[in-house]
Amino acid sequence: MGVTLVYLEGKAEVKYSQEVRLAPGAWKKVLLPFDLFAREGNPITPAELARLNGIMFTWGKSKNPERGVLYLGGLAFSDNAAPPAGANVLIDDFEEGLKWTGPAALSDVNVKSGKQSLRLDLSVSERPALTDFPHDLSSANALCFEAFSEAETGAPVEIILHSKDAVKPEL
Image (cartoon, helix red, strand yellow):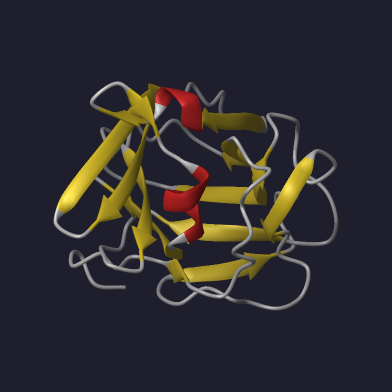
């Protein structure tokens, strides 16, 4: 699975891509450090992170015609430690009801820790989004989460971080 972290500021995009290999049937920690996420050689700043007002997942066409399902656990802005224990700012541990809009559901199947995970159906084209999360990200230097898939999908995944002045795409 290819993961691209995209920061939108106005009409500008800053992208950071990383290939993540998910072994079918096993959980994998995904860590996207902000120091590798840069515009013109300068890492994204705490001031830019403070303007975040949304997180959205999108995905492309899968190499697997059945496309499958992706499960997430412990989504956090962190100090490069495993969520949620090392989380500076926990975005969602999926334990307090569904906060996401779009094609996302809580699941008690394929759970890394706690009682639930977030289930993303890769066969639909809608985009799950979250706008209600803590915004003091001054101590964070990475976005991290746990990911699980029952089968190899090969689908590229984008995580879009919207700033308050982002103009595309809409949440």
